[in-house]
Image 1 (cartoon, rainbow, N blue to C red):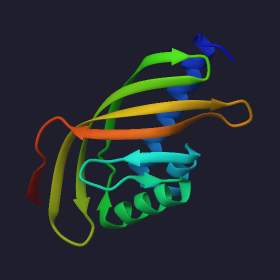
Image 2 (spheres, rainbow, N blue to C red):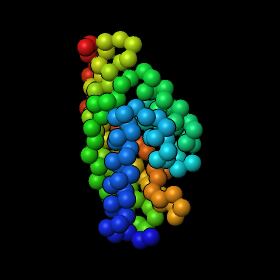
Image 3 (cartoon, helix red, strand yellow):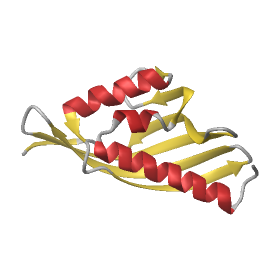
Length: 139
């Protein structure tokens, strides 16, 4: 498949599925959006490699924090046949499940996507950074 409107729609649909799965705290659905050999590079964490490890990281995170306030906007920065790069900005208020702490987060996320003819678009590499310091407060 070459770049064009169909690829744009498929990528936008993938990003929408990511946002919905993240906000729902659904580690299985989130991990399914990554390639088998994907890497996740999150701020202040060691690299996470492979879909099972990515699923485990999200599952652990969602056990600790409710991500329901996740909101993101994405745009496609580059699209070359079966490779794409997107840039997103996000805000979230993480609600600690075992206490009254809330964490307000503002950040950026870059996805490098790869299209497999059998599986469609998947996230091959994801990286995030914060655009402002996190704010911790009590509920």
